[in-house]
Image (cartoon, rainbow, N blue to C red):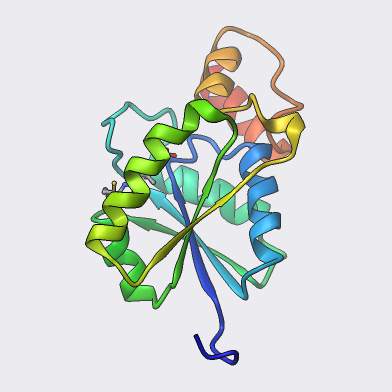
Length: 165
Ligand code: PNS
């Protein structure tokens, strides 16, 4: 790769909702890339039900990174590699929190390698304090009345309270 070519990374996911673990990964990514596009999937391979619709998820992330010129947020619908190609992105970012993430992540990375050999998957490890954190646990704890204020930004907490009551 030319040393002058800006590195564009895509960080794809469901982000339902974005957690402080995701935010940590965004900050880490910006240490090694020039531009980051957070790509919010409107569907997912597990076809799970979402708490926030895709536009709400995009808006929450946009609010959180509003002051960061290196971060963009976009929804995507089809194959990740097609979206990455359209953007001219060279790198896909995924987080590895624990060994339990590994099988699924390896499978996805290898499938994406088959579909888009020019695009590399880069795994980043979040801060240890977020290693147990997932959006699905945040949704579960919040829906059962638990305090998730340590795990999500204030804007997300507010929307969770509005949504869940
Ligand atoms: O946050 P998630 O749910 O683990 O993210 C999964 C996601 C959205 C990154 C993955 O499902 C995906 O890339 N979906 C797009 C469809 C696609 O390209 N599938 C083939 C790759 S294995």
